[in-house]
Length: 514
Image (cartoon, rainbow, N blue to C red; front, top):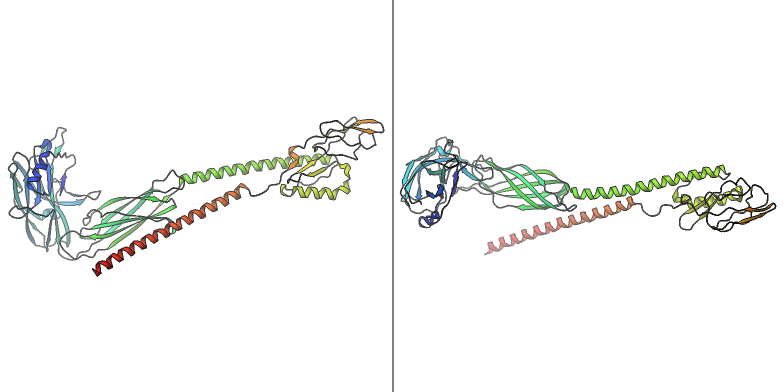
């Protein structure tokens, strides 16, 4: 049962229709005019107008054959009504519905094969009328199904308050199958999909798969679609099996949209649509049922997860950049100190790398000590924590007194140094914070004050793993965990599928034994 009307039609169902349905029995189609002025229905019936259990009219003919059938028109309104009865071709709507051509559109197929005995019929209030019709197949009718309908509409067309012409009508389906070679063929085409995305980094989301069902055969088909979404190499398969699709008429097609939940974002995804033909409604005819498959590739990028990764990489890059800048500044200061020490008569060398600085400085001082003597004033001290303190003295002062070292160490000793006005050795310097006095032949001489170690002369060699190394280790661990989880999930899905198949087989065996 269905109701067909032209665009702009308004259909109102008053309480009277429900009461009339209880009296008249099951009806194939019911309609009401605006404001409840008319209500009617149409259903298949026997020749004497008795109730019929059919919901549609299925006829099988040979080319050139003829058959007779009838419908029952019931007027459920309280006034006499005159109706128009005619046949029209059927087609599939964009969403898979079943509709008939409008009265103003001429039919070209089964709608032209029908001859109605009474094109107009007047039915008294709360009365019924049987309307017969003949179906004559042309001699050159092609084998297969030809779909249409018997339409009952109001003879007088009213104009609504908004100026729209109202054409209310009801109809019962008519299907004529012409004998001959039947070739069922239902194809899946134009598979496309899109991912909704998730705010959770690397979280699963729903994917919408759209495809076209096309009937390229000559019989109407009902199929069961199954949609699968998988990642690369079949990883992360998610499957949805839909209920039976709508009836696809020969030569017709319509789009189907299916939502697949819980799809992991694996960047490149594949949507696969399988449709198994389960029925070919119509007369009892042996028809081979086949299946069709089509695929489509679509992207599913975890944008939120990539954003998190970019933020982490940016933070790591910032840390590395800052460390590099500090190292460059330290190398610059080191070169400056070495140049300064060369002007004071100290050995000049190439600065070692921070990772080998302590060992290199100590070895250089041990080897160069006997050669340059302690009077050079260059002193390096191992701090036993991986760092080295370098002490470089400055040139003597203008009045015979030595100034503080360029970078001294607290408590460091200088012996063997001489002042500018005396050839006598300078006595031991006092600790930091106090001024020492050195006795010489000419009298007391001011001693330099020891200064704290400057940060630019202390080298801390790099230890342990760098942030980049730690990031690579963490990313490798996360990748291994994700891969393991997906593998376990795929294995679990296979186990469930095998268990379900075993259950079905066991049920089939039990049924066969019974």
